[in-house]
Image 1 (tube, rainbow, N blue to C red):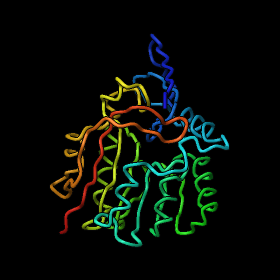
Image 2: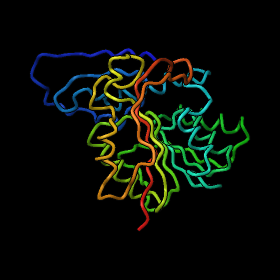
Image 3: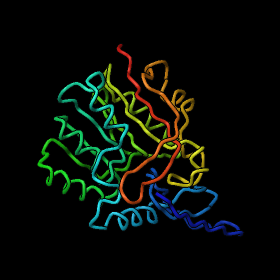
Length: 255
């Protein structure tokens, strides 16, 4: 995916008029950003969501209908997911990852901020005859992850502003059952050199050391897989190209 970003720099005093709330999370999709003092590089909800909904309005699945490569590898290894696991997938988009997990017999909840994306996800599930999935339109900053509720949480290219990212990662650790796993793939700051997708600033991306710090949280999670690597990402027509990613399989320690 080769995103196009437009930045508007306004060299004047900020208006006293209240600014709209910023979008609560970024996916690796094209969006327009506005530079302002309150939310530097953060698109407002009013700007970002219509853009995502408009992008998803195509009849095609722009990020494909096949699962993410790293998720597919993990989900097919019996060491990581036991049968009929209860799984939460955040930033689910058009449903490809949730449908894959549902076809394997897991009970999945897919969450995304785009109502159009979720509608396409529901359609994809019907086309595949998968009934063990719930899809929700939700704002991650207000979403109730629950406590010791999930056998696994999936986060595939779901990039968050740093403050929200720390909040969400803490909730993920709390929400996993003891022994539950986090399956995560994200772009690293080095991805800015590749220009094949992802947010426009390094602070939105992830590093292995940063993930260890933000997910370690009192020693409750250990990484069974943790790697930064270069790989070809081929996921639909808008998510294609050589990229630099970090992949993590984290497991919550028992009490």
